[in-house]
Length: 90
Image 1: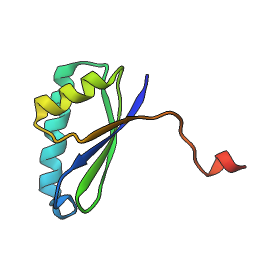
Image 2: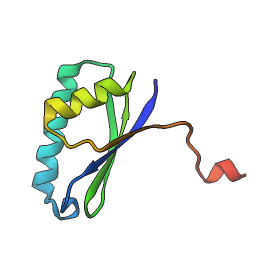
Image 3: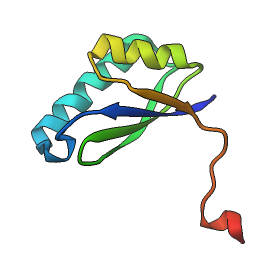
């Protein structure tokens, strides 16, 4: 199944509290549960003003549906072509 990186502009994201992040995560989990077994949230990276979320999903449409249902910002969606890591250079 394809993997996607979602870029979400969220000014002040780096200042979110643990409670804020727990609430966002719980809401996302609830939306995913309602959308069914085809979408999986792997992890997110929080920076000063953005979230970068990694999902596995059959297509980009369900990524957008997740954002719509959860009221989450979604600025760019990138389908991952391949993954490299340090072992790639060995």
